[in-house]
Image (cartoon, rainbow over all chains, first blue to last red; front, side, top):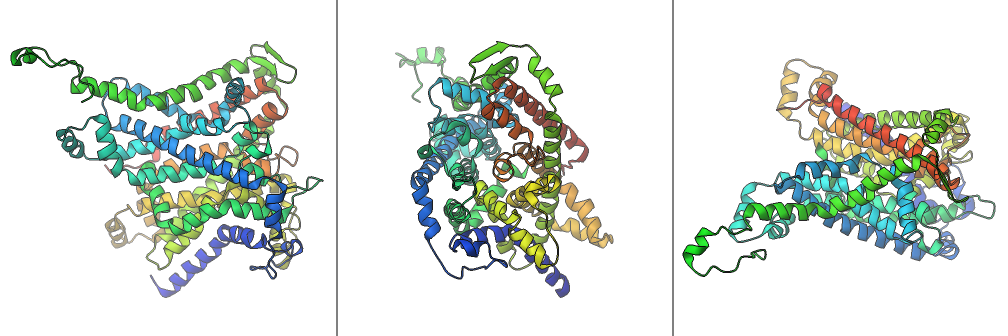
Length: 276
Length: 313
């Protein structure tokens, strides 16, 4: 590639970067600025004077610590649950020949065709009937057992299909049963798929918005996305510095993990059956 | 081994006569069902049954506040076809989806091709383009909401180059553009990564051969790259279309469906009817419509794969 072309490509990449990077950078830095500086133009890339005032208010105005914990433990449980359900089912569909597996697979795949939004009304009524509205149960059970886990099952299945037959035959010689073959032979090899499923399940749960606002009504039960929009003044206007501070806190842990493990993160997602 | 139910045979020849009930085949039958049982039960309870209930509810006038649940047959469907808000909602949904999908796939492919060049620092750029994917959706939306305000950063920038920016979130056309753009930069990194993975699977000798035949860079892209990564294009387009039909948080945070109904997409309208106005029956009817649209588009894209998806084998 010629030198001029190289410079050109770098220039295009740099310009393209701005709308991807600037909002996040600005969110984090503006949250440290005094209110009047947030509105200053041109925006300062680093705060001229640093204040943690907004961060103090984040915790004063709402039980943000509790809400953070809610989001976190829900996302962890959803991720673990999805891994169990989807790796079992993915393995079953990929490696075990049983009568009816084709039909069952088609039934399960309907989960990919039915967005959660379509079934939110009956799901609301069902959980209401069980007295579980304004609890975290729907936010855990629906993603683990319902439609969202089907994509995970599909990815696990795609991965298990590619494992060579000989591996399991060797395991059988050693006297392993089906579950042993799954647990001791196949699953340890499925780390890339497990990684990818964990990442996107966690992110999906962390971002969930419609379900929390439908199912939850008390502030100490709220999840982060829902809590972020609650920092408004008496007139319903956004308290920008507080919203930005809370937004930064919500993004920080995932961003840190992402920066530290970005290679695994991105490649894990790219490597799985999603290649199509 | 634990499933061996036969009693130990008394003598060697009797054992040979009687085949054990739990043959490998029978065990696999049972194991297969057990492995998929939790998922199957979940799908029946949380997808199939609710889908049936949506149909049932759509035949009723159900106002939770008034405590009424009356069978109205196809009444809700009549209301749907004469609902003056339905047309705009469908239009907003179509504009959002078409705009987002076209921009997203083009930009993702463009960035992936750039990053697939032999250049130093591409991993850094890949990380930067991907980073919005991991920022909390509502947080990302809030920041853009601030930047898009009348006195926000975008207009400040436009001002400095002598352009008078509109009040983005309050204009009929600009509100929709804003929502599309916010979602575009949030999600394009994911498709870019999938495209990059596909591009890296294209054998280099094909490009060499095309080069020797005198094909221009654009011709190589059209005739070599695009056909070879077409399965990925199909997959990303299906995922992006279905995802775009589900857009909700961005609308709820940025525009609340406004101004007027210009950004009231179907899911937002469904939410309003069911959970703000408590018209669950009518909401269910809108849900059904959404389901039919998702189903039709997915089937259509899947059918079209024969026409434009190229498989090497």
